[in-house]
Image (tube, rainbow, N blue to C red):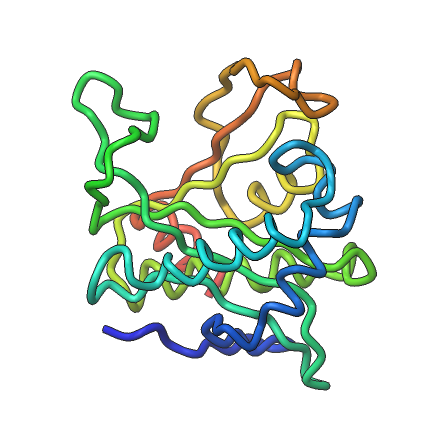
Length: 205
């Protein structure tokens, strides 16, 4: 399965290509966007190039599954950010809920996320694109679970995940050489299964 183009009411989500570096680097070099990501600072151009290559690689890490990164365009063909269904490492039996460092990726679960330019925040685009990605994950790709992670203090992203039906399942604390502000409050994981998604959407429909 190749990476599909997706459509919601106000968004067209197209598979990420090399031609989209302008939008990914613009996001990576924006202080507001990067406040709760990575080091909590804008990336350098070289770092942004590395991120772009990693985003591209998400479409090929698990062959034939249809995962990847999508660039979102408004109905006016204006790029506003990206959404991702990233490969998730196979879980260890003795540490079920935490991703491992292995390169053996699951064919049943994925990590999702997004980044939007600040001027499109608060307009419902994050939720709309995320809901379409979840529909694609469960209905088209047949995944059994999707999860997302963010910093505890990132209230906006946590709210989007909750509105999309994900529930908080874990909080943990890591030490970083250059910790971003707020990381002392920990990091959180939200999750939704296909059964939960189907139940929620059967009620909504």
